Each structure stands twice: as C-alpha cells, then as structure tokens.
Length: 334
Image (cartoon, rainbow, N blue to C red; front, side, top):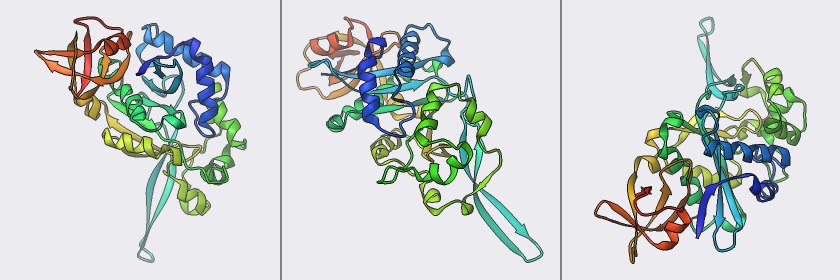
C-alpha cells in the first residue's frame, strides 16, 4: 500500500536521491544535503506544532509499505514571503496613446511584484519516473489539500502553486538566458541553488525594478513566458482539476507560471467529509482518499471505504497504515 506520511530527518538519504532525480530547475529540491536536512528538521517541527503557524513548512513523503522505499514527496508551505519578499513577474499590458498621430500601442511587460506575501504554497511535487502512473501522483498531490483541510485556519485563504518553467531539449532555459541572467549574472544552477540555500538577499539586491518590455527580449524568452516544463504538464492538469487557475504571475528565473485558488474552493477540500473510523470489511466498496483529520498525526492512503451509519468502515490494512483506532476522525474525499 502507498502511504503519505510526514517527513523527518531520517529521510535525508531518500530526499537527496529524489533531488538528484528531479534535475535542473526544481528549485524547492536542491542537491544540497545541508539545505535538505534543514527542510526535514523544519518539517518535523511543523508537524509537532513547534513552529508559528505562518512559519510552518510541511513535507510529505510517499512510501511503499511493502518495500519501505520512498517513491516521491510533496510539500505545503503555510505562508510565503514571511521572512523575505517573494518576488514574481506580473505579465501586464501597458497602454500608450498619442493624440498627435491618433494611435494607441499596447505593450506587454514584465513587472516585478511581491503580491503573494502570506499565501499558502503547495509544491515540491515529485515522483520517481516509474511511479508516474496508477494514481500515485493523484494520491500525493491531493494529500496536500487533505492536510490543509484538517486545520484550515493554519493556512491562508489563498493557495498558490509555482510550476517549473520551460527548458529547451538541449537543457538551456530560454527565459533565464534571455531575461533573468542579464540582471543576476550567474549560471542558472548557481542562482537556482542560492534561492533555497541562502536568505535570498541577492534577489532583493539585483532583481529589476523597472518594467521589462516583452518586445525587447529575444523571441525564445518571450515564448517561454508562462510555459510549463515538460515534466510539469501532469502537475498543471491536476491543479486545474482542483480549481486552480493562472494568476498572471511568472517565476523571475525560469518564467514558469504561478497558479492560485481560494483555499475553501479547492475541490478536494470542498468535497471531503469528516467521519469517525470503524474497523471492518468494506468488501466491494469503492476506493476513496482517506486521511487522518489532524496535522500532528497526519497520514493518507487510498483505500476501500464503506460509509454506513455515520461512520467510515476501513479494513485492517488501512487502519494500521493510518495508525488510527476505532472512533478516530478521518477525512474522506467523496
């Protein structure tokens, strides 16, 4: 059985392996042991309730109970832009009109903004390539919303997700080469690593303060604005299925789009129900996403559930995987 569970420092080896597999441009999963260990320590403290609500960052691991191998991960950051600004480019239309020649020009421009401050971020969704079928990705992705639904007051009323931007077949990043590199003057991999491993002061110091007219940048960079990495298309489809839509914001490094949704309108949260668990044999019942309805003991699985007499009947394997007993509250995605 696949189980979504909280991450902890002993997961460092697995997390490092996934970071290497994820490749270039996966900013939230750098190939740096110290940074990853800090994230795991922060996650453990967050699940224990030792962090202030806005400073919590929850990392979830997808584990195969039969082998014990970690197959993927995802995360929920309670609030971005708390300790430092969270910069994005907003794609805007700037209109100019000349009465002298009775002509109007509409220019598309990139404008540096800090609009996401305080928003909750779902991200870091990564699966081993051989696990990207059979529902594992859906289980992992939707577990983030079940976590938020368990204690929604810990999270913002707006939830965002940043998708990795487009990379060309030769491994280059057209948006970085045509726009961002002109301001940061670093190799992409170095700048990408610094986002997670430093306090981000270099972004505050060097990010452009004036609009960048899209007409003036290379065509390859302009075409990459808001375009998703080939490995991010499935993630985008899952976000759209949950009710997320493009926000008009893009990443300042790779041009990948930011999607957002009202927290309480996310489909998995909106269509989930709290019920007490009951041990039994659900027999031919249909499968549902089931999670523990508390952050401190959060776990999630996909299993057969029979809803009867105001309770959720689960078999022994599911009850043990969730580490719950009779009467404990679970959340069911209908």
